[in-house]
Length: 116
Length: 114
Image 1 (cartoon, each protein chain N blue to C red):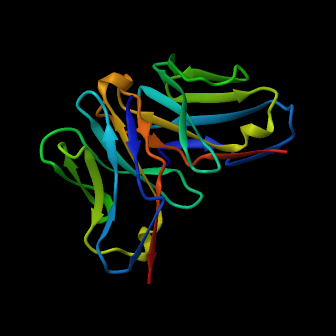
Image 2: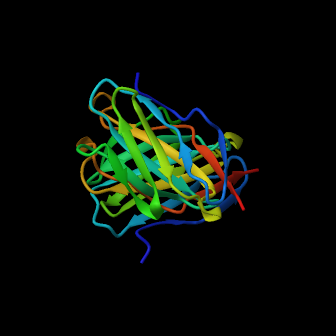
């Protein structure tokens, strides 16, 4: 069974479109994250949710909006896509609150977004 | 400010030789240190972590890392490299001053040659 899953794996779209990426974890974790990995492989935290509540919201354009219908799901909706949004987006989850420090984050396989 | 440095963009090692991937960090509190591996077109996989206790931490796939507080380092090691170890390796650190957000290194590409 896949612990953290994301759909779709690949997403190719035109500038200006709106798209969503879905994430689900079956680990029973309380905290979920979205990361962006750019073409140079740098990882950047975008959002973090704990029990459906937003706890990290880094400097991310308002066009990006996370939604957590329940603690097992954290979806990412992107409006008005731009060329610079092309990247690999990773979802992750961890057992407890991010405040515990020692928790391991488990990552999904990633969604490669290409904006044309 | 909290930071993680992986000073080598790429490390080349012959198969069967020992390997080291370097990581140094800067935090104001007690660090929690992590190593992850990313194989091509895959997500990040957890390898090992240091929280407290023994400075030598053993992890998956025969990897280990040594926490050195005086040198603020957490180098990843393996006694005998395999070609299948070729991947991108990330070091990350958390501490209370970063509100326990993971601070990531830039990654080191490890190439194991047969």
